[in-house]
Length: 101
Image (cartoon, rainbow, N blue to C red; front, side, top):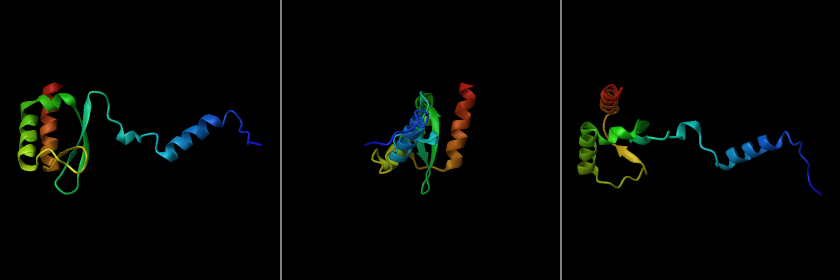
C-alpha cells in the first residue's frame, strides 16, 4: 500500500528533498567556470570570486608569495585564504580588472 502523488507534484517533491538533504548548492556557492573563490581578511573572512587569469598576474603573484611566506600553505579554512585587508584586495582586483577589460 503506497501513497500516490499526482505526477505534477513529483518534480517539485524531488527538488524539495534535494534542497533539504543538501544536494543542491546555493547560488552564492557556485563558482563560474574560469574563476576561483578566495577568502580575504585577517579575522573575519569574506568570499570573493575572481578570474583564474588574475592568479598569473605579477601583482597577484606577489600577494600570494607574501601569504605563503607569512602563513605557509596550510589553511584550516579549507580554501585559498588571503589574510590581507579587504580594501587592499579590492584595490588590486579592480586594477587587474581594468587591465583585462
